[in-house]
Length: 82
Image (cartoon, rainbow, N blue to C red; front, top):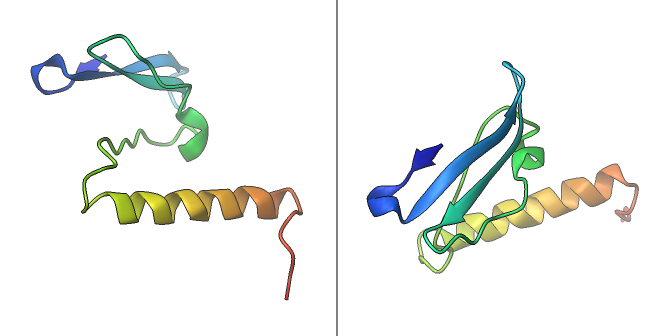
């Protein structure tokens, strides 16, 4: 577990096989926790952007979210070609 500044949040690795992080989540000081976030990076890294209301982070987070959604839909054959 990694505790953030002043224990405002924690990053918790739930399942690690020695090579791949299979499950991890973050939780705030009140005990609210995210779902398993390992699937986004396919277990290769742990990335977290917090405070999406921050004006320097939110455009990047929105762009990344849309790219991930597009990739997911494309993999399922749900993206229409022009």
